[in-house]
Amino acid sequence: MAYSSVRDISSVPRNISYVHQQFLALLGNTSTFVKFICLVIFFCYFLSFSDAAVKAVSVTPGYMLPSSLFCLWTPFTFCFLEIHFWEVCVDIVTMGLCGKLIEPLWGQVEMMTFFAIVNLGVAILSTTYYILLYYLTYQTSFLFGVHVHGLAGYIAGVCVAVKQIMPDHLILKTPMGKFSNRNVPLTIMLISVILWMIGFLDSDHPTMFMSGLIVSWIYLRFYQRHSNGTKGDLADNFTFASFFPNVLQPPMAIVGNSVHKLLVKARICRRTVKQVSVFAPSGVTVSLSGLDPHDMERRKQKALRALDERLGKVKAPKMTKPLVSSVAINIPSTESGHRDDSSVLAPGNVT
Image 1 (cartoon, rainbow, N blue to C red):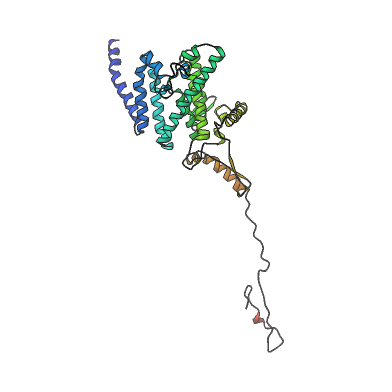
Image 2 (cartoon, helix red, strand yellow):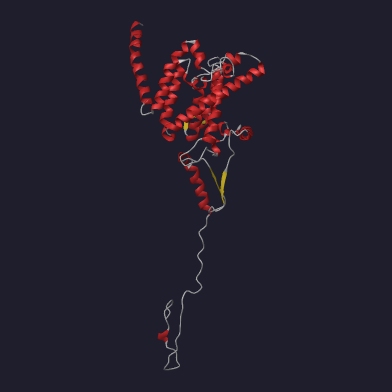
C-alpha cells in the first residue's frame, strides 16, 4: 500500500509535465490574440476568490440599468472571469481550437471582431432576459443575485462557426445515427440545461449559451464580411431550423422566419436578397450572396452532383445532312456532238 502511494505521488510531476506539453502544443503557432486571451482568462481566475472582484467584473443585470451603480464596463470584462478552474481549461482549449481551425480561414482581425461581437451580444441578451424575468416575477434575485461571467456564450459561437465551416464532418457513430458538427450546438445546449437542473452549473450558463447561439448565428448569417465583398451566408444548410433535428425543422422554420421578419422590421437584420440570372445555360440559376471561397469547398460534392444531373439532360446537337454530297458537270465536245466522258469531273470538283 505504501509503495503504491509513493508510486502515485511520483507520477504526478510526469502528468503535470504531460499536460503542460499538450497545452503548449495546442497554443503553438497561434496568434498573439489567442495567447493574450488565454493568459487574461488564467490570471482573472484568481479574482474569483474575491466576492467584490466578481461583482465588479461580472455583468449584474440590476447594475446594467441606470442607477447609482451603473456598471457600464462589465459587458467588456465579464467574459474573462471564470469561477471554476475546469472552466478555465475549457476556455483555453476552445481558444486554442479557434486558433487552429477558424483563425487560418478568417484571419486575426475577423477573429477579434467575432470575439467582441459575440461576447457583447451575450451580455446584452442575457441582461434583457433576466430583466424580463424580473418584470414577470418581481423577484429581485434576477436583478442582483445573478452574475453573468465566462466564455459560455463564445463557446456557443464557436460551435456555430464550426457548423458553418464543416457541417458534415463526422465526429462519431452512435446506435441512434451519425453525430456530426451540425449536431454539436443543440447537444451542448441540452447538456448545459441538464447540468443546471441537477445543480452542477449556475443558471447563467444555459442563458449565455443560448444567447451566444443567437448572436453568432445572426452575425454569421447576415453580417460577416467575406474576402469577395459579400456579406453573410444565406445557404440553405445554415438556416436557424438546421440547428434542430429533421423532425423539428418544419415548425422551427416557421418560428425562425417569423423572428427574422421581426428583426428585419426592427432593422437588426437585412432582407434575404437573391440574384436571378435568366441567361443561364438551362433554366434559371439562383445565386445567393455571402458565398465565401471557403464555403465552396464544403459544397463541392453537392455542386458536382447537380452538374452531373444537368449534363445528363443536355443532348448532343444533331448534325444536319448536306443537301449535295457531290457535283457532276458534263461539258459537250466542240468537235462532235457526242459526249466526252473524260469531261465528267470527280465528285466535289468544280471548274
